[in-house]
Length: 67
Image (cartoon, rainbow, N blue to C red; front, side, top):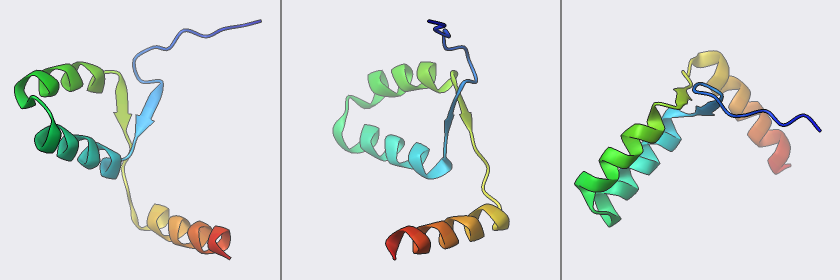
């Protein structure tokens, strides 16, 4: 079995998910400590960009799945 080791940049996150994580840190955590920890994790992530095309595709796919 081929197991790949994760490398920096292998994981992607949306800006909305990033906002939710920061919201949680500020609402429920030891802010300074958790921000420091999350900033280390963030170095491993790619933050995806949104544009009109992506938002359009999201709307179409959401509607399709909802039906």
